[in-house]
Amino acid sequence: MPAPQSPLPIVVLISGRGSNLQSIIDCASAGVLAVDIRAVISNRPAAAGLELARRAGIPTEVVDHTRHAERAAFDHALQACIDRYRPGLLVLAGFMRLLTPAFVTHYRGRMLNIHPSLLPALPGLDTHRRAIASGQREHGASVHFVTADMDGGPVIVQARVKVLPGDTPGQLAERVLAREHRLFPLAIQWFAEQRIFLDDNGQIVFDGLPLASPFDLDSEVVLPC
Ligand code: GRF
Image 1 (tube, rainbow, N blue to C red):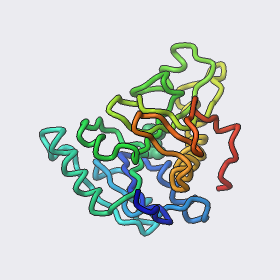
Image 2: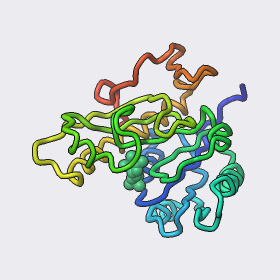
Image 3: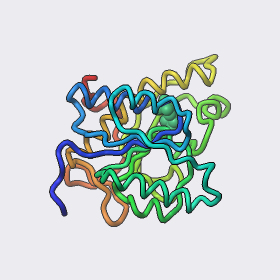
Image 4: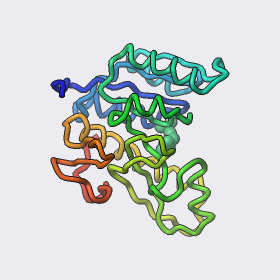
């Protein structure tokens, strides 16, 4: 295995607002997340997160999915763009595109996604509304390794949020998002420290031992940022 680089070079993929990107930028600037954000890439030219990256002096790129008729051609262009920056980890922070198996295989074990639900519950879109509509008493967010199974890869760590009586999807989303901003930097830092990796059987290994079930953010030491 090649020696780890410190700080870990990462590339962040976004499609929109970029609040998770901002939390990663803030934790890295505060010195509590050992990453070098080499580039932020969006599939949407108007993604607000691109401006957040520019303000932080991070190179930005747009690989516009509407300019590629085929999903495979888009993924190919995206991969070429990403690999120019030689990341040790690819971070999907609100990247709203399905990925082809070839792309996922290329980044196997070095691609993390954050999803706004307690996976395996509620994969897919519109999770906050669906959590309320289905009467869930608890909701939250998960960070997982990305596999070909959409939102189905092995989960590293989760944050739980109570669904309150009368919650609107917007109110619930806001409380979940606040937890996401702690959750994602923590998982990325574990990866940067080589405390977690995905083994050949698709099993997460944490501190040398198989991870039987995802960590709960509330029982972990949280990064001070
Ligand atoms: C977050 O809720 C994340 O869990 C989901 O997309 C949203 C992105 O928000 N994958 P932001 O762009 O990071 O603000």
